[in-house]
Image 1 (cartoon, rainbow, N blue to C red):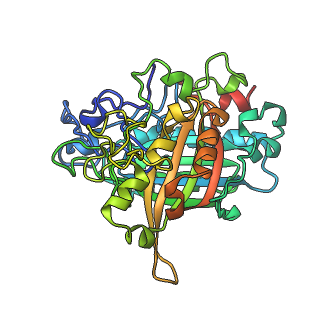
Image 2: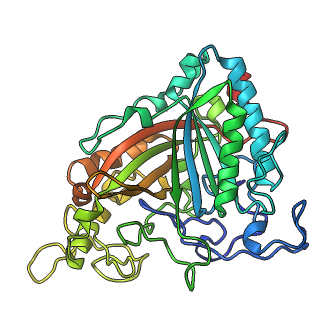
Image 3: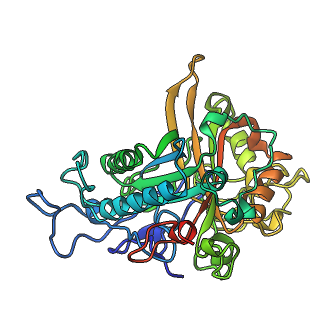
Length: 414
């Protein structure tokens, strides 16, 4: 598989050659990176950057960056709505500006024009920028006939408490980086480029464990303290591309090499969760909290023995355990590549933490990825008592831009 999301300086550790050890509530815990081999430093820097700053993700490629790119420690998600009177021509100009800005910023260069200098002295820091289109984008630009069927609205789920103002949108942007100033710099640059053409509809900030924070690379923990990310599809699997990316002969043609992303802001009811004892928490998930291994034994990567019973005659992994319900073999083979961020937005009026997961999952078709799994969870997942879906979005993310192209050009200039 051609992967434009892998750094020039190949990343080691859990990520391996692919950087994929992600899960329903987190991403790769971290990785070691080779130091800069040429001693180069960005303009204005007096010495070579540390290895974390030198890592560069490629903008151009078969797929957009930020899908199979190793998980970064800082992230921003944002949706934009086109301004009144803005149509296809204005949208194309915006995507051209955004693509040019993303290419420069991902290479560790300042944005064109009046750069804010927020990230002065920093290198690329694994920055990735990803762009997508919401269902409303196609009616706003007169491209209704090009709208994929896969962008049909997601069904309602019983755990939904969705805020429409923080859901969907004409355009979607995902930013990831291993330095918070680099990530914010990119967000600000893209927002400035959108002025007059599109305005921010909603924006969310997330985080993951920083590279090198653990003695050895580990799968991350979510805000419930659970190791999460043991069951993601891996590029080494023969059907990975089929599950995650639209094929070259897919429909519509402009989505070749692209993917569909479901974004959900999932609040974790941490005060309720933390009242449970360890054994109760592990029964909800179906895995040991200490190391992520199934309750039936083994290591984090051991396949759970779903039929195994205990001395009481009951199955060891409860029938409503999250790990049981989310397994592909329990969902007709449905699978998705989960690449989320955790978030904490302070405390609400009751003093409870407004914290949880910015769930981001990728699939070739939501009808065979997110939707069947979420329907199964909706019918009896023990974890549902401790989470609440508060925002949602579905976006078509076209394939990567070739040299000289901008993202979405095959749609907007067809």
